[in-house]
Image (cartoon, rainbow, N blue to C red; front, side, top):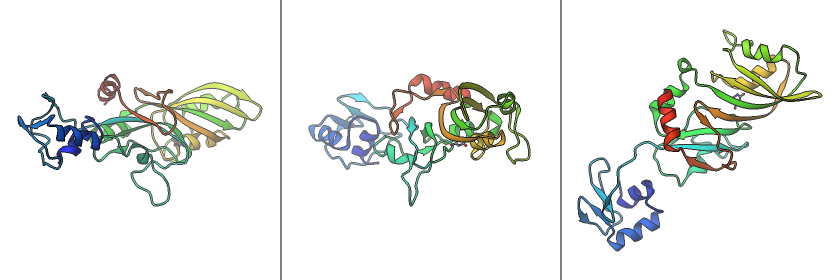
Length: 237
Ligand code: URA
């Protein structure tokens, strides 16, 4: 990898900032000062120092994105903006979203390049909890919440797994709930609400496993997971 690219990925600075550092002689590779930004390094074995301090290569990156409505959860799309377009300058190679939120769904999306973690988090065997804030049209019947909790028929071979449904607000012809599910079937929340006679008008994911959406993150903004969040996530799987 090029030295300037490596330094930018290691969050030492932007590509132009790290080029200046290299020119200044602040960077050494294997204890030799290097003044060429395009010098090739082997990131797993070379010792790279900035002002004498060694950088430790980070292979995996973990970000929390507050997905807005109107963008698709994909790495590429010919028509629509994707969730990855918000992370163009973020360090990390081969990043991808873990799981999928619909185009009109907002909220917490984990973006990483840790394939094994993603695989585990999405495995149906792991029953990772996902909590959604769901605004619905329809009438809340006495048994609506218990039906959602006990399992509803959404047209699959079996009914949905046990869930948690908590009422937040109720008005004439509409209601808002927090719904926690442990599966990730296609359009699952919308289909569950449909199965109890309602329709979802707004959907936002507020937690994913041990991660809780950071409400200080505006829609379309992301941040690296904290060390504690990363550890909680890695412990979960
Ligand atoms: N369930 C849905 O119906 N849509 C989502 O985006 C996520 C869960």
